[in-house]
Image (cartoon, helix red, strand yellow):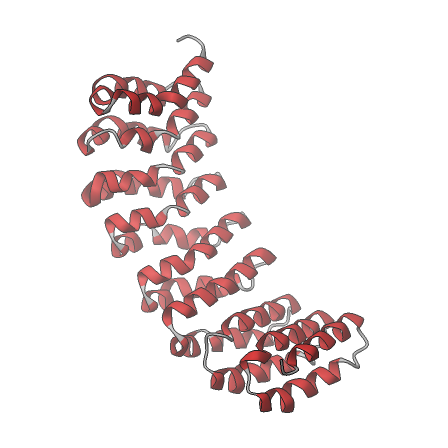
Length: 332
């Protein structure tokens, strides 16, 4: 049709038409029309068609996907319109199970790499969020070799939402790649996220460490995570010292009582003497959180005296949170 709006609506409804007509008619009659929509002169039509790539491909054989859809996918991955590329990136990973391991490596991985390096952040985000689908097909070793270099680059991306997406996906990648790979490749990125200039990324980094510690166990966390987090107590920037306290509070329930008392508690108590009120009242809040994890004797001899000192602090917020923490320390 001459009207792009008609073609746009056809692209949106094509999958429902495929379901109604069945696979045979889809493969013989509708696929050529879908290819034309993917190569339409109007970007809006290409966006609509690109978003249906995986849904329509589910009606095709792997050979038909390679012959008809993959050439269009390659073209769309470098389309002039960022919205077309973003629409493609949101669904293209779903083609991996349809093509299998050899087909994904040959035809799709180069497209994934192109999209991961896209200048538009939403394109990169859409690819990152679907990495697990590719991992299920090609395996973690090939994923690491082909896509992780690009992921490492994205961890330093200037767009904070891209960095956030990477940090949030690190636990998933870590659980699939294993502890050794995390220590060598992903660990440094995760620790750097704790010192990101964006608060949401620092918080996500702390939560990611908690998930990773749960996966790899308390002994691993004691050896590989706790020392690095504790080292942040010497950071000159108070925001990063606050992030350190958040990370410790999230790890406290995972490590053993001995590690909590011998290694983490002294740093928390020392943070209560920080020159910045925000650090002090966050230390008080953390003491309230970990009090149920500590033996009664430790609470009475170490935590409560520290909180009593904070009750005399010049800052009203520090006094408030110290009072709240003292209440939390009382036996229930």
